[in-house]
Length: 312
View 1 (spheres, rainbow, N blue to C red):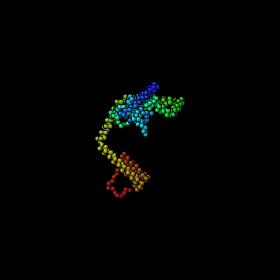
View 2: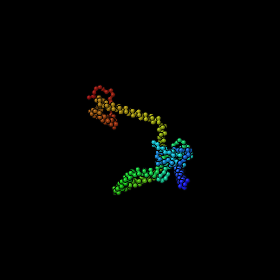
View 3: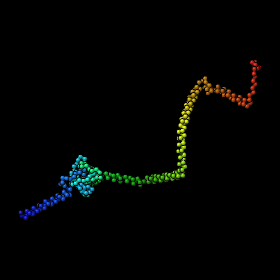
View 4: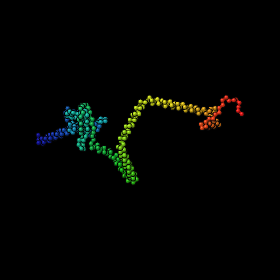
């Protein structure tokens, strides 16, 4: 074997060793593991934000596993995580995707949970995408048009308010309104002070009056309870009196209705003027006679056994 052939063989071996070391380094960095005894857990996300196979999985900030598979489903993404050993996960375990570096790379941060119940082997861990700088920039870009519109409207509003406040009329009205409000508050404060003083001065008397009124009401209630039967009799008597009054009114109505008949005394007293005048004259004569009898007495010439022959 010539020297050139030996040199070529050395160079080839060196290259192969370098490639092997490079693959081992990449596998170590990516967490590749050829063991068939890895423990797998699954998590579901609405959006993985660029997560790739081989990305690290950390537990409380410590790298413990890698992303083995990413399955895009109808409305979510199912991610299979591989761990070289069993992880004590609770039933409330939670996964989130965050940035691995400032500008690139993703990782899954797995929270083990605090529930007393362990995670079932077939359970799927709920997850969420916390977002990164790219998603934030995209969101800000989508909102830029709305922000410009809001800024323009706010500038117009502030300009209108400034022009409105510069007018003397509005300032005068505002000053007048504030003065009236201040005066009203002063009156209210004075009234409250007077009311407080009045209550302080007359508090015992008011309390005594209230107590006396309460006692009087209790007494009336007791009297009403004791005389309930008498009150019922009184109320029934009042009802009968009202019924009698109604009957009397009915009789008066009947009497007034009969006044229209010409052959009755009431009709002659109210309608016949001649009869009324004669009756009045008779009553006047009787009144004069009674007055004369009262003052002068009665001078009577009474004859017994009077002759039937008239006196001439």
